[in-house]
Length: 162
Ligand code: ADP
Image (cartoon, rainbow, N blue to C red; front, top):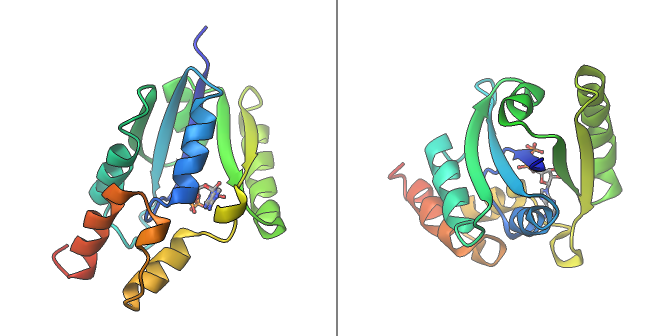
């Protein structure tokens, strides 16, 4: 049976920390689906098409990785995709509380789906999409923190073209 992993997140924008988790998770499963969660009540920085394209372009070198947008409950998306493993990244202890609650809620609703956590690499342990957005908006050089294909999508947004 094919082992399918789901890596959900906002990816607003995708960072090198996210890409590192994608690469490491992809090595553990037969197929990895990166799910870009769209939450209409939350204001996004990059539009969903840009997040989708940016993540697709950033993972194009990984043949068994797919990227999709999803609405609604993560466990419904995971079941639809046949996913049995949810992958999340853990940076500092501050991530733990939030991740623990989500993982427990998901387990309660979908006991057949396991959540696994991959620890962030040292050099990305401070890196968050919010930091990238903030630095970029203030005119700082955020480029070192994102996969190369993400830059064009960020520039379109920053120049007001999107
Ligand atoms: P969410 O909005 O669901 O928290 P994010 O897009 O911020 O989603 O992150 C998706 C997942 O990737 C989360 O599990 C988050 O902890 C993890 N993550 C974010 N940044 C990093 C990083 N620098 N290194 C490792 N994991 C990360």
